[in-house]
Amino acid sequence: DLGIKTFATLSNGEQIENPKHLRKSLRRLKQLQRKVSKKVKGSINRNKARIALAKQHEKVSNQRNDFLHKVTKKLVSENQTVCLETLKAKNMMANHKLAQALSDIAIGKFKTLIEYKALWYGSNILRCGQFEASSKICNPCGATNHLLTLKDREWICANCGSVNDRDKNASLNIRDFCFY
Image 1 (cartoon, rainbow, N blue to C red):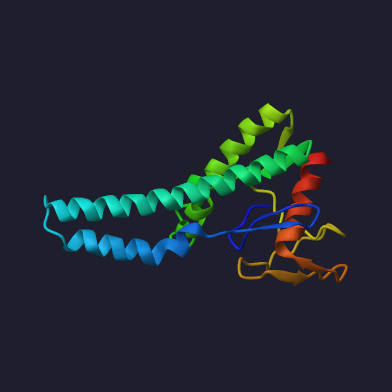
Image 2 (cartoon, rainbow, N blue to C red):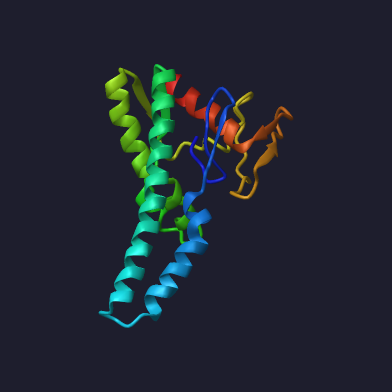
């Protein structure tokens, strides 16, 4: 299960933390952008400031790519089958409240990397539908919690009384959707 709080939650309970490279560099990017905007257009100093800004953007991009390559190699080399949700990154980016956080984790790039690495390592990629309510279905009993919102990180099943962490429950449900 991919998410914003934690980058990925695996069905074995392991959580891969989200490094939030863009958020960590945002203050520096703003400073450099301000320097560029205050310089006279066409000046040598503006060009220097523009290059410094571009280098900072490249650094963030390189950090993100390095993280994604390491995670995808780990997932594909350690598992014979990887189950993923079919997520439409472009549609998710339309939500202006989540767009920056979603672009920071680069879901589309993650999907591309894991697909070609699965071919290299001979792993299988299975997908469950994007409209499956993976977070809302209680994994132990199968009851659906229709009142669950994005801010609810843990919830108690009304049917069986089990306490479900949203991400762990979703990862177990995605595994079950793919195999059963």
